[in-house]
Image (cartoon, rainbow, N blue to C red; front, side):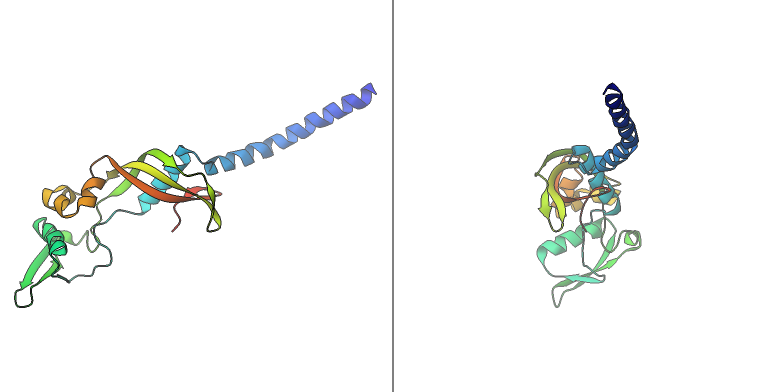
Length: 186
């Protein structure tokens, strides 16, 4: 019996040694998928490197505005020399075209990308839309902010942008768990 017990012990040791590389590989792969602040930060920062924050969406130039708020916003970009303005007094419309200095930023006028500085909270991961998802609240700073975005006129005309570039902004995002880590669903 002693021989049989010794053979079982050796077989168990051999199986453990053979299983060790498999366990290390699978535990290493799943570490990116764990619901941790570091993994959420990595997923958000990867997304934000590819998705800048912008002032304007779905606008084509030349652009006409008669709305007082939209005119204020566009006039701030005129003052920053990104747009040029002509007025049609008879129909009370301002027409905006892209100035030479604005060609690089037009038509969306992006003002940087976010970098997550902390994860403030997240919901318990749960199944939704075919993935395990969580909603994350985070603090961020804005990187690569152009000079024109920091002018008082542009900040006053676009208060959401002003908060974003303040250095103490918060955001909220849904993240989906994937085999390669947490990602913002597109």
